[in-house]
Every structure is written in structure tokens, then in C-alpha cells.
Length: 267
Image 1: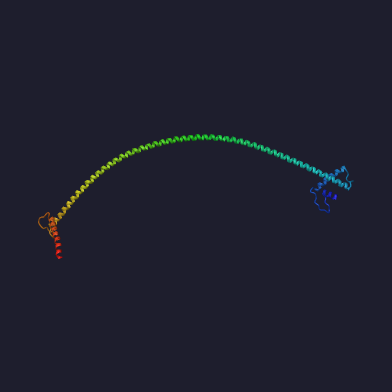
Image 2: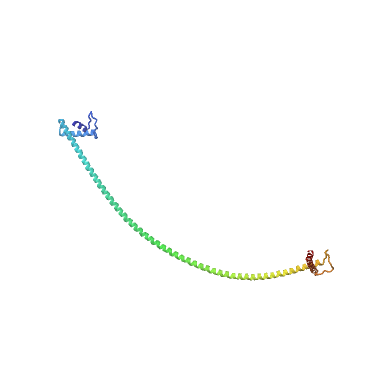
């Protein structure tokens, strides 16, 4: 049983077992064991050992190898822990240094920012003062321009009022002269109309008188003519028409008187 364990530990496989070989390379393992056996031969001849002694020796050798491996593992762990601690310390130191550097940069940036802000505030104050002075100058200039414009407007308004008053006076004088001229023309027109009306009345009277004379002449002519339109005498008798008209009127009156009397008799 011990031989099988030793052979399997060494890296050999038995003919009737199919167990997995160790993960380490068998050739390297054999060389390591050969070097250890040579070391043992130099110290003690193992050919004269019995089987039990050989197994004990192999077990001791394996235990020493395991112990050496554990020692190497412990050394490796300690080295790894040391490396981790050193790395952590270096990282912490670098972080602290970076944090300190960042704080210093931040403080310097804050101081620079304060300086820049103070400079900007000073510049802004200067600009505000300059703007206020310029605005005051502009306001004063605007006030002067406004006063000049106002005075010019007042002068223009006063001149316009004076011109308007003068024009009104001129218009009043012209209107009074026009009214007086119109009144004179109206009086002249009225006198002309009255004269024309009187002339028309006189002309009408003259025309009426002329028509009366013509009618009288026509009546006289008719009275001096007989039924055949021949003169009744050798001399033209003026006023014969009037007499004939009076005689005709008397006859008409007599005829008008006879008609009611004949009507009464017939009844």
C-alpha cells in the first residue's frame, strides 16, 4: 500500500489502475527525486536499506519536501502581504500626496479666482463710473439741446402768432373794405334796380297808352268802313270807333232788357 502511494506520488501509474497523474510534470518530478536520492546516497547508501526503511526514508523525504514547499508558500505569502502592504502604503501616500496637491491647486485656484473676481469687480466699478459720467454728459447735452429746441420752438410759435395776428388784422381790414365795397355796390344795384323798375313802369305805361291808341285807331278805322270795307265818307272821322262802341253797348243793353220781358209774356 505504501509502495502504491509512493509510486502515485512520484508520478507513475500502475497497470491495473487508471488514476490521474499529478499536475506537476513527471520528468521534472523525477529529476527532483533523483537529485534528492543522489544527495541521500552521498550521505547514506540506500541500497542496503530494507523496504520499510526505504518507505520511511521516502516518507521523511516527502515530508521534508512538503515542509519546504509550505515554507516557500509561507515566504511567498509573507512577500505577497509585504508587497500588498507596501503597495497599499505607496497608494495611500500617493493618494494623500495627490489630495494635498489637489487641495493646494484648489486653494491656489480659489486665491486666483478671488483675485480675478476682485479685479473684475474693480473693472466693473470703473466701467460703471465711466458709464455714469457718460450718461450724465449725455443727459446734460440732451437737456441743453432740449432747452435750445424749446426756445427755438417758442420763438417760432411767437413769430407765427405775430404773423397770424398781422394776417388777421390785414384780413379784417380787407374784409371791412370788401364789406363797404359790397354795401356800395348793393346801394348802386338797388338804385339801378329802382331806376330800371321805374323805366319799366314808364315803358309799360307808354306801351299801354300806345296799345290803347292803336285799339282806338283800329276801332275808328272799322267805324269809318262799311260792310264791304269801303270808306263811309270822304273824310276820316276820328273818334267814330268810340261812338260806334258806345252805340253797340246801348243796343246790347236794350236787347238784354227785352229778353226777360219776352220770357215773362210767354209764361
